[in-house]
Image (tube, rainbow, N blue to C red; front, top):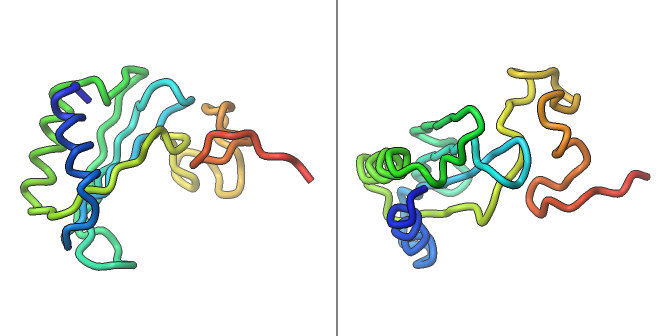
Length: 128
């Protein structure tokens, strides 16, 4: 996202839990360098499904640096009157959806970087 928008959202996330609704922001990419998908969900309670979910996609461009996308995310969060924002520190894995873009239980053929990595740490997993 553009620095201003990313900074604004980061500041809101750093404030911690301020109540519901909560906006969750997750970044996805074919590797750890560029977020080609951003998903923002709105939760009304702990352990609930999102009441609203919006996704933004690109063909290789890092959406975190796109001011228009940053503004759309801000507007989406404001529209749903989120009191809290939770945002991933980095890219959380492949932008493709298991069972939609590739078969359940298989590795995404388009994202070999994530084939044997922990999606939260990005570290290689050891095989047993």
